[in-house]
Image (cartoon, rainbow, N blue to C red; front, side):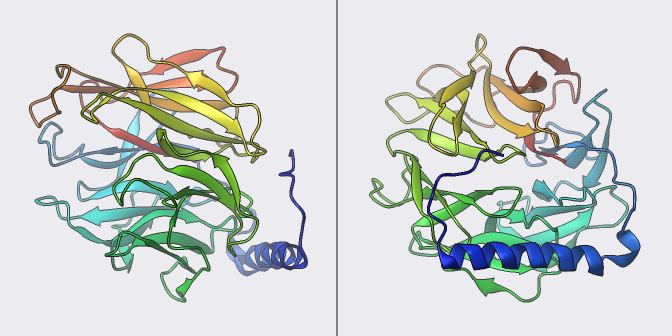
Length: 335
């Protein structure tokens, strides 16, 4: 793994040792899970239920086979934004009231869909992720003043404690070794609703802060590569009214070098979401297209088309994955 060039302080060294000890302890405590066969990796998507376009048996969180596009439903239509545990067995998701989108808390369910989701935390939590050992969860709570609070808690929702992350920083991705957060920073933003935020890297204890991308662009961070070398993000192109008209996938090395465009728009379709394969060799891309007119905002009557394309990490090869023909969905994870 290419290291992130920074000076390791005594606190960093202790934090790294503590993290390694936690992983070792977790591996020992899992007991009967030791040596258990990992379930096959799946691409996790959300089919919204509020638009009324999806049959009731399809709406919700789905686990899609990346080889043939077959799927199973993991959670019903109230649940969305799935994040899969490192061992591939559990799925975090938020529950919302379908009528108005009101957040009803953070839930966890079995990745096979055998058990109904179980609530583990209240509140409008977002941008949540698993620790590398799957024993803890990082999550962000939005404050009334527009700032953020970052928490860490046990996988069952107990033992919640606040991390020393500034209120201006919203955690949007966690490296798979647990050493780094990527944050969207509101420092110097043009108002609390600005979408043009800088992207920073920092340790979970708030140290080692480094600006990775300057403010001034509308972007969404999608995640670290499995080897921790790159950060993948979507850069949006908006018109004079602030309406999204196109987007492209971009990457940058976590050392701030080797920025490049990974995938450009193809005709009217453009990439809006993506997820790395577990081995980092491929990226699942959600291509978006609609029939809206230039200068007009999208409504519930706007026809939306989404589709999955599997692209090699070097961008040289791609294949279309036939899934949910004609039904819009969001793509969130691949584990």
